[in-house]
Length: 510
Image (cartoon, rainbow, N blue to C red):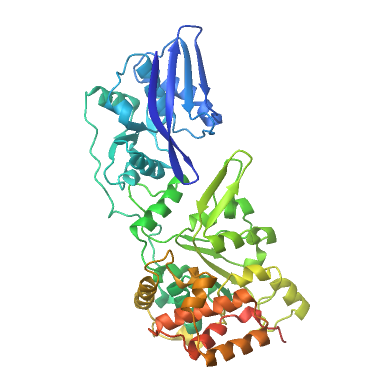
């Protein structure tokens, strides 16, 4: 007898619908799974067999063939346990064909006693189920909160295999799950505030500009100057995630199995700070079975790379493409996967190997060639893609001992939001959201400068040897500074301040 059950799987952060076909025929007892099933899927036969028996049902002692269609796509993971079990029970005659088998998708991992365990990627699967026009989804109870954010989808959470069978037989009703669109989960219980930062007014100003225009930043300063402290507070002055951004971010975390428990969508912008020993696959994504990397985990948020020159050269060089494109494409012999990677890059580094070049209190023991070799660990093409380069000097004692609090994040956020609103009006008919996203054509269109500003920029380019890409970055930063000043035109003072944020392009002098 043949039974068909709908299920779903994830490729990248998007899902697709598949059919689990189960055929039971007379012959020697066997259990065969076909359809390019990977190891965890092939092992499901032992879990399914034990779960069916321990749930009080009879496991058929016949020839069982399970086909996962389409058969030309590799299947991996343990989410097929539940649909395979339901298919076997249907082919055995224990479950009759109903609205559930024709219009509901089943996902879930089975324990040996019949309990249904949570799976990864439930949110993108639910989005695809809704998009494909199916009525609902059976899934583990632990995955219900993240799936409930999909409006108009019938969600049937279940704790055991026997509960799923009872619902399908009409012996009980599925527990209702309310939409939790407003119950978006924070990524952290502590929100660092800029009022904690003593001094460093120039650095805070630069980060405000970066947040307003979505610009990448690198901070150069001696150890203990507060670079990490500043970076960790950047998300507090970024606008809140929109619902669409929350769904995109949550899909990445769902695929990785990192969604906070008992919550809906993620509400706060991610802040990822990988260690400098990370591999290129860990940063950009990949592996034998591709998974999102840190750049995708930082999607719609901040990627912080502390001690940038300590990262291996091949690791940080892979950042060049996602910084420009906002996504990562990982190609394998049998497949190609695309992950979103639209993040703000914030990096920090010392000015020299000893860390005290330019510090008036500590003597630098590095020679010019040593400093040049140290800074050369970060390539010119990558540095060109970082809009704002700022120096973060040591904090003065009078700033540390001052009882006066600095501006709070909420005060800075108000100015950032006003600048973002100006950009939203400017780009309302285009697929551009912030000034950092301007291409060459739109930079010429929206970042026009007067003659005096043009002369100033020309002199700076000749003196410091700025590249064409650095020239474009300066214009974008000047546009953001003008937006913060609520100025329709870019003025000379805005260009001058933008030029000041290219400190690493200047010659080293002892």
